[in-house]
Length: 524
Image (cartoon, rainbow, N blue to C red; front, side):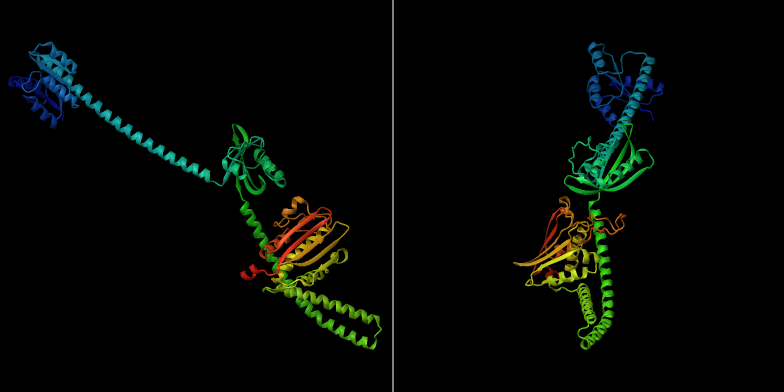
């Protein structure tokens, strides 16, 4: 329903006259004589036009207009007065009344003014509604933008945290130079976060053995012969060696063909894999040794009977023919066979014993040397000298631990002398305070200073591998496991090892073996 017209005049005849004019113009009206009545009506109803007499009994019409305007009422006002005072007109103008009529006035002009005022009212209402909509839309938009900003800030924080905590190093390589790297990439290779990589070649971060392979993969990605490539390699990190895995792919940087490189450090995984291989080979070796031990025991048992018969018959012949040299030779060789069988049986029995026991190191060394004589190269080409202190006490532990570790040192000594003219291996034992000193010295090629700290590392070897093709098939081969297994045994048994070596002169292993291995006893 369209809001009507409110008439405020203290003269009833004027109110009735104005109501009639409004009704003729089809306007709903209400009328009152005082401003107090008008205020009550304005509290409860809306009006599109106010017709206000300036001279009212309880309050000036102009004061009333100012009061309702101060309260925020914007209803268009038409002022009506019989007074011709200029001050009233000026005040009405200041109050921005819609129109000003002096009594008497023509009806048609008043109706037109009411019509125009009502139009103004509707325009004001529409403008106010639009303002409200605009304010509501602005508030909604500001709220949505604010929420989006908060969301983006959260996402950015999460993204930054993800990058900061990431295990991935990212770099861009152009013309083999690193033109961009994130902090993680710098950290992986031991550089500070603000390090300048512009003069650093990505390939130079790798150790020599994989540089060519990395170069081939990078060229393949740049030429788009392959979409991407993954490679694992050993790299420099200040004074240490690490292992990394790199994913490489062609990438356009500054409109130039470049490479995107994503790097992960896998040092722990690599070492774990190496340990797993080591343990697998150790287990395989133990199983093979056990099988060989059982087989040797069976063979020696089967040999004992015919040797005993031969020896018995030879002794009978000696009684009949004491000067027969052939009989003496038979007895000498059967005695030799008995000694060999005893060595095999003793070694096999001791190494298969799972329980710790007292061990005579001198006897162990003699048995190992005797056993190695089955190797014809050792028997005929290597001179073995011993200076063993017969007063040394026994040590306590697993026979197989001491046998395998000492055998590994001896075997490395034999291999080191393959290409030298003078082949000698020397053993010495001494009792010192609370430990036994065992020295094993060879006259081999020696160990280069750069390799001295690596001899006990798993899989480190300077010898060709088991499957590697070489011209001289008799050249000793290695897996890099013998001394690493020996080192783990030494550590477990609190055995101190010192290695001294000079190139082309030889190597000396000096072992300090505790007489009472308390740690071992407690563990078992």
